[in-house]
Image 1 (cartoon, rainbow, N blue to C red):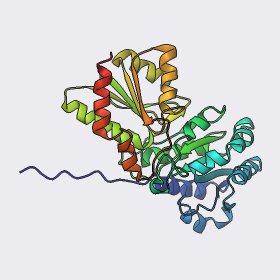
Image 2: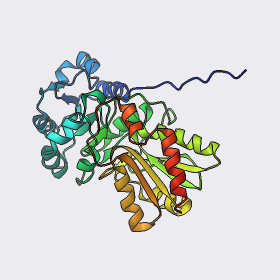
Image 3: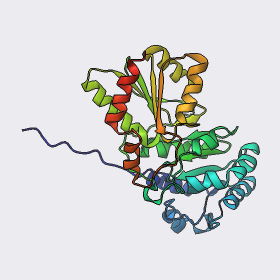
Image 4: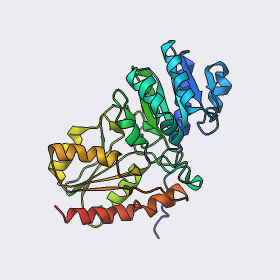
Amino acid sequence: MNAPVTAAKLYDCRDAFAETLEALATNNDKVVAVCNDSVGSSKLGGFKSKFPERLVNVGIAEQNMVGVGAGLANGGQLPFVCGASCFLTGRALEQIKADLAYSNANVKLVGISSGMAYGELGPTHHSIEDFAWTRVLPNLPVIAPCDRIETAAAVKWAADYAGPCFLRLSRVGVPDLLPEGHVFELGRANLLREGSDLTLIANGTLTHRIVKAADILASRGVKVRVLNMATVRPIDEAAIVAAAKETGAILTAEEHSIFGGLGSAVAEVVVDHAPVPMKRLGVPGVFAHTGSAEWLLDEFGMAPSAIADAAEALIKRK
Protein backbone atom coordinates (compact mmCIF):
# COMPACT_ATOMS: atom_id res chain seq x y z
CA MET A 1 0.00 0.00 0.00
CA ASN A 2 1.39 3.38 -1.01
CA ALA A 3 2.02 5.92 1.73
CA PRO A 4 -0.28 8.96 1.62
CA VAL A 5 1.14 12.00 -0.12
CA THR A 6 1.75 14.83 2.34
CA ALA A 7 0.93 18.27 0.96
CA ALA A 8 3.72 20.82 1.24
CA LYS A 9 3.24 23.34 4.03
CA LEU A 10 2.15 26.75 2.77
CA TYR A 11 3.51 30.03 4.11
CA ASP A 12 2.26 33.62 3.90
CA CYS A 13 5.16 35.72 2.62
CA ARG A 14 3.89 38.67 4.65
CA ASP A 15 4.91 36.83 7.82
CA ALA A 16 8.47 36.48 6.54
CA PHE A 17 8.48 40.18 5.64
CA ALA A 18 7.25 41.23 9.09
CA GLU A 19 9.64 38.96 10.96
CA THR A 20 12.61 40.18 8.93
CA LEU A 21 11.62 43.84 9.26
CA GLU A 22 11.39 43.49 13.05
CA ALA A 23 14.83 41.86 13.15
CA LEU A 24 16.28 44.68 11.04
CA ALA A 25 14.68 47.30 13.26
CA THR A 26 16.11 45.66 16.37
CA ASN A 27 19.62 46.15 15.01
CA ASN A 28 19.10 49.46 13.22
CA ASP A 29 17.19 52.31 14.85
CA LYS A 30 16.88 54.04 11.47
CA VAL A 31 14.37 51.43 10.24
CA VAL A 32 10.82 52.81 10.22
CA ALA A 33 7.53 51.55 8.78
CA VAL A 34 4.96 53.73 7.04
CA CYS A 35 1.51 52.39 6.23
CA ASN A 36 -1.93 53.44 4.98
CA ASP A 37 -4.23 52.18 7.73
CA SER A 38 -2.91 48.71 6.90
CA VAL A 39 -1.21 47.61 10.12
CA GLY A 40 -3.10 44.33 10.04
CA SER A 41 -2.87 43.48 6.35
CA SER A 42 0.80 44.49 6.26
CA LYS A 43 1.45 42.29 9.32
CA LEU A 44 2.92 45.26 11.20
CA GLY A 45 1.24 44.49 14.54
CA GLY A 46 4.44 43.08 16.03
CA PHE A 47 6.45 46.01 14.70
CA LYS A 48 3.96 48.44 16.24
CA SER A 49 4.21 46.70 19.63
CA LYS A 50 8.01 46.67 19.64
CA PHE A 51 8.68 50.03 18.01
CA PRO A 52 5.55 52.21 18.41
CA GLU A 53 7.51 55.40 17.85
CA ARG A 54 8.80 54.07 14.52
CA LEU A 55 5.47 53.26 12.91
CA VAL A 56 3.78 56.04 10.94
CA ASN A 57 0.17 55.37 9.96
CA VAL A 58 -0.98 58.08 7.56
CA GLY A 59 -4.48 56.64 7.09
CA ILE A 60 -5.98 55.95 3.69
CA ALA A 61 -3.77 58.46 1.89
CA GLU A 62 -1.33 56.60 -0.33
CA GLN A 63 0.07 59.65 -2.10
CA ASN A 64 0.84 61.26 1.24
CA MET A 65 2.30 57.96 2.47
CA VAL A 66 4.92 57.87 -0.29
CA GLY A 67 5.74 61.54 0.30
CA VAL A 68 6.17 60.89 4.03
CA GLY A 69 8.47 58.00 3.16
CA ALA A 70 10.57 60.26 0.95
CA GLY A 71 10.77 62.87 3.71
CA LEU A 72 11.89 60.29 6.26
CA ALA A 73 14.56 59.04 3.86
CA ASN A 74 15.78 62.60 3.28
CA GLY A 75 16.02 62.91 7.07
CA GLY A 76 18.31 59.89 7.30
CA GLN A 77 15.76 57.22 8.20
CA LEU A 78 15.28 53.88 6.40
CA PRO A 79 11.55 53.72 5.60
CA PHE A 80 9.62 50.66 4.46
CA VAL A 81 6.40 52.01 2.94
CA CYS A 82 3.73 49.31 3.08
CA GLY A 83 0.27 49.07 1.61
CA ALA A 84 -2.02 47.12 -0.69
CA SER A 85 -0.18 46.95 -3.98
CA CYS A 86 -3.18 48.04 -6.02
CA PHE A 87 -3.47 51.32 -4.10
CA LEU A 88 0.22 51.89 -3.43
CA THR A 89 1.17 51.69 -7.10
CA GLY A 90 -2.04 53.01 -8.63
CA ARG A 91 -2.94 56.00 -6.46
CA ALA A 92 0.60 57.05 -5.67
CA LEU A 93 2.32 56.42 -9.01
CA GLU A 94 3.18 60.09 -9.54
CA GLN A 95 4.79 60.28 -6.10
CA ILE A 96 6.68 57.03 -6.73
CA LYS A 97 7.94 58.51 -10.00
CA ALA A 98 8.86 62.00 -8.78
CA ASP A 99 9.57 61.65 -5.05
CA LEU A 100 11.33 58.28 -5.17
CA ALA A 101 12.59 57.19 -8.59
CA TYR A 102 13.54 60.60 -10.01
CA SER A 103 14.96 61.72 -6.66
CA ASN A 104 16.59 58.33 -6.02
CA ALA A 105 15.22 58.42 -2.48
CA ASN A 106 16.19 55.53 -0.20
CA VAL A 107 12.62 54.25 0.28
CA LYS A 108 11.55 50.61 0.19
CA LEU A 109 8.07 50.15 -1.26
CA VAL A 110 6.27 46.99 -0.13
CA GLY A 111 3.18 46.16 -2.19
CA ILE A 112 1.10 43.83 -0.04
CA SER A 113 -1.56 41.41 -1.33
CA SER A 114 -0.49 41.81 -4.94
CA GLY A 115 -1.88 40.10 -8.01
CA MET A 116 -5.35 38.73 -7.34
CA ALA A 117 -4.74 37.93 -3.68
CA TYR A 118 -7.74 39.97 -2.52
CA GLY A 119 -9.89 37.60 -4.55
CA GLU A 120 -13.50 38.22 -3.62
CA LEU A 121 -12.98 41.98 -3.31
CA GLY A 122 -12.85 42.07 -7.09
CA PRO A 123 -11.32 44.25 -9.82
CA THR A 124 -10.86 47.37 -7.66
CA HIS A 125 -8.50 45.41 -5.42
CA HIS A 126 -6.74 43.20 -7.96
CA SER A 127 -3.23 44.45 -8.64
CA ILE A 128 -2.49 43.06 -12.08
CA GLU A 129 -0.91 46.20 -13.52
CA ASP A 130 1.77 46.97 -10.93
CA PHE A 131 4.69 45.36 -12.80
CA ALA A 132 3.84 47.47 -15.86
CA TRP A 133 3.54 50.69 -13.88
CA THR A 134 6.71 50.27 -11.85
CA ARG A 135 9.18 48.53 -14.13
CA VAL A 136 9.13 51.41 -16.61
CA LEU A 137 10.57 53.81 -14.00
CA PRO A 138 14.33 54.37 -13.89
CA ASN A 139 16.16 53.74 -10.60
CA LEU A 140 13.44 51.41 -9.28
CA PRO A 141 14.24 47.70 -8.98
CA VAL A 142 11.07 45.58 -9.12
CA ILE A 143 11.09 42.29 -7.20
CA ALA A 144 8.50 39.53 -6.65
CA PRO A 145 9.84 36.81 -4.31
CA CYS A 146 8.59 33.26 -4.81
CA ASP A 147 8.48 32.05 -1.20
CA ARG A 148 9.07 33.04 2.42
CA ILE A 149 12.80 32.33 2.16
CA GLU A 150 13.28 34.60 -0.84
CA THR A 151 11.04 37.22 0.77
CA ALA A 152 13.25 37.40 3.87
CA ALA A 153 16.37 37.52 1.69
CA ALA A 154 14.93 40.30 -0.50
CA VAL A 155 13.95 42.40 2.54
CA LYS A 156 17.49 42.11 3.90
CA TRP A 157 18.87 43.04 0.49
CA ALA A 158 16.53 46.05 0.27
CA ALA A 159 17.70 47.37 3.64
CA ASP A 160 21.29 47.40 2.38
CA TYR A 161 20.48 48.76 -1.07
CA ALA A 162 21.10 52.50 -1.50
CA GLY A 163 18.01 53.68 -3.34
CA PRO A 164 14.33 52.99 -3.90
CA CYS A 165 12.93 49.56 -4.74
CA PHE A 166 9.55 47.83 -5.01
CA LEU A 167 8.90 44.50 -3.32
CA ARG A 168 5.72 42.79 -4.55
CA LEU A 169 4.33 40.37 -1.95
CA SER A 170 1.22 38.19 -1.94
CA ARG A 171 -0.94 36.94 0.90
CA VAL A 172 -1.63 33.61 -0.81
CA GLY A 173 0.18 30.72 0.86
CA VAL A 174 3.07 29.18 -1.09
CA PRO A 175 5.47 26.32 -0.32
CA ASP A 176 9.19 26.69 0.25
CA LEU A 177 11.17 26.43 -2.99
CA LEU A 178 14.57 27.89 -2.20
CA PRO A 179 17.03 26.59 0.41
CA GLU A 180 17.31 28.10 3.88
CA GLY A 181 20.03 30.74 3.92
CA HIS A 182 19.36 31.78 0.32
CA VAL A 183 20.97 35.13 -0.51
CA PHE A 184 19.02 37.39 -2.85
CA GLU A 185 20.94 38.81 -5.82
CA LEU A 186 19.32 41.62 -7.78
CA GLY A 187 18.86 40.75 -11.43
CA ARG A 188 19.80 37.08 -11.00
CA ALA A 189 17.35 34.30 -11.86
CA ASN A 190 17.33 31.06 -9.87
CA LEU A 191 17.64 27.84 -11.85
CA LEU A 192 15.23 25.45 -10.15
CA ARG A 193 15.41 22.65 -12.71
CA GLU A 194 17.48 21.91 -15.78
CA GLY A 195 15.95 20.82 -19.07
CA SER A 196 16.42 21.07 -22.82
CA ASP A 197 12.94 20.96 -24.41
CA LEU A 198 11.56 24.33 -23.23
CA THR A 199 11.97 26.89 -20.45
CA LEU A 200 9.29 27.86 -17.93
CA ILE A 201 9.74 31.27 -16.26
CA ALA A 202 7.68 32.73 -13.41
CA ASN A 203 7.92 34.59 -10.11
CA GLY A 204 5.84 35.16 -7.00
CA THR A 205 2.88 32.82 -6.56
CA LEU A 206 3.34 31.30 -10.01
CA THR A 207 6.77 29.82 -9.42
CA HIS A 208 5.51 26.83 -7.46
CA ARG A 209 2.86 26.26 -10.14
CA ILE A 210 5.44 26.02 -12.92
CA VAL A 211 7.45 23.62 -10.77
CA LYS A 212 4.34 21.42 -10.55
CA ALA A 213 3.84 21.81 -14.30
CA ALA A 214 7.43 20.66 -14.82
CA ASP A 215 6.65 17.54 -12.77
CA ILE A 216 3.66 16.83 -15.01
CA LEU A 217 5.75 17.34 -18.13
CA ALA A 218 8.48 15.07 -16.78
CA SER A 219 5.87 12.32 -16.39
CA ARG A 220 5.13 12.82 -20.10
CA GLY A 221 8.81 12.56 -21.03
CA VAL A 222 9.29 16.30 -21.54
CA LYS A 223 12.34 17.89 -19.91
CA VAL A 224 11.91 21.57 -19.15
CA ARG A 225 14.14 24.19 -17.60
CA VAL A 226 12.53 26.11 -14.71
CA LEU A 227 13.62 29.65 -13.81
CA ASN A 228 12.43 31.71 -10.87
CA MET A 229 12.70 35.28 -12.18
CA ALA A 230 12.11 37.28 -9.01
CA THR A 231 13.67 40.46 -10.39
CA VAL A 232 11.54 41.94 -13.14
CA ARG A 233 13.77 45.01 -13.39
CA PRO A 234 16.69 44.69 -13.94
CA ILE A 235 15.90 41.36 -15.56
CA ASP A 236 18.43 38.55 -15.97
CA GLU A 237 19.11 38.90 -19.70
CA ALA A 238 21.87 36.29 -19.69
CA ALA A 239 19.58 33.62 -18.25
CA ILE A 240 16.85 34.44 -20.77
CA VAL A 241 19.19 34.39 -23.77
CA ALA A 242 20.72 31.11 -22.62
CA ALA A 243 17.24 29.63 -22.18
CA ALA A 244 16.21 30.72 -25.65
CA LYS A 245 19.34 29.36 -27.34
CA GLU A 246 19.56 26.14 -25.35
CA THR A 247 15.89 25.10 -25.05
CA GLY A 248 14.38 26.77 -28.12
CA ALA A 249 11.14 28.06 -26.58
CA ILE A 250 10.02 30.02 -23.50
CA LEU A 251 6.73 30.06 -21.60
CA THR A 252 6.10 32.68 -18.91
CA ALA A 253 3.37 32.68 -16.26
CA GLU A 254 2.43 35.56 -13.99
CA GLU A 255 -0.27 36.85 -11.67
CA HIS A 256 -0.50 40.00 -13.77
CA SER A 257 -1.77 41.20 -17.11
CA ILE A 258 0.10 39.66 -20.03
CA PHE A 259 0.74 43.25 -21.13
CA GLY A 260 3.67 45.06 -19.52
CA GLY A 261 4.62 42.45 -16.94
CA LEU A 262 7.11 39.61 -16.63
CA GLY A 263 6.18 38.04 -19.96
CA SER A 264 6.62 41.34 -21.75
CA ALA A 265 9.99 41.92 -20.06
CA VAL A 266 11.18 38.45 -21.13
CA ALA A 267 9.84 38.95 -24.65
CA GLU A 268 11.77 42.22 -24.99
CA VAL A 269 15.02 40.36 -24.34
CA VAL A 270 14.07 37.47 -26.62
CA VAL A 271 13.16 39.65 -29.58
CA ASP A 272 16.37 41.67 -29.26
CA HIS A 273 18.84 38.85 -28.72
CA ALA A 274 17.50 35.36 -29.45
CA PRO A 275 14.08 35.14 -31.14
CA VAL A 276 12.30 31.86 -30.37
CA PRO A 277 8.65 30.83 -29.97
CA MET A 278 7.12 32.23 -26.78
CA LYS A 279 3.86 31.96 -24.86
CA ARG A 280 2.78 34.42 -22.16
CA LEU A 281 0.29 33.18 -19.59
CA GLY A 282 -1.44 35.70 -17.35
CA VAL A 283 -4.57 37.83 -17.31
CA PRO A 284 -5.35 38.38 -21.01
CA GLY A 285 -5.93 42.13 -21.04
CA VAL A 286 -9.22 42.10 -19.15
CA PHE A 287 -10.42 43.08 -15.69
CA ALA A 288 -10.07 39.94 -13.59
CA HIS A 289 -13.31 38.55 -12.20
CA THR A 290 -14.34 38.30 -8.57
CA GLY A 291 -13.30 35.05 -6.95
CA SER A 292 -10.52 33.43 -4.93
CA ALA A 293 -6.98 33.93 -6.16
CA GLU A 294 -6.46 30.21 -6.71
CA TRP A 295 -9.68 29.92 -8.71
CA LEU A 296 -8.81 32.96 -10.81
CA LEU A 297 -5.36 31.61 -11.67
CA ASP A 298 -6.97 28.36 -12.78
CA GLU A 299 -9.60 30.26 -14.78
CA PHE A 300 -6.89 32.14 -16.65
CA GLY A 301 -5.15 28.94 -17.71
CA MET A 302 -2.51 28.75 -14.99
CA ALA A 303 -3.38 25.52 -13.23
CA PRO A 304 -0.25 23.33 -13.35
CA SER A 305 -1.90 20.93 -15.80
CA ALA A 306 -2.94 23.82 -18.07
CA ILE A 307 0.58 25.25 -17.97
CA ALA A 308 1.93 21.81 -18.94
CA ASP A 309 -0.54 21.58 -21.85
CA ALA A 310 0.42 25.07 -23.06
CA ALA A 311 4.09 24.12 -22.87
CA GLU A 312 3.56 21.02 -25.02
CA ALA A 313 1.66 23.07 -27.59
CA LEU A 314 4.50 25.59 -27.64
CA ILE A 315 7.14 22.91 -28.17
CA LYS A 316 5.34 21.92 -31.38
CA ARG A 317 6.04 25.43 -32.74
CA LYS A 318 9.81 25.03 -32.46
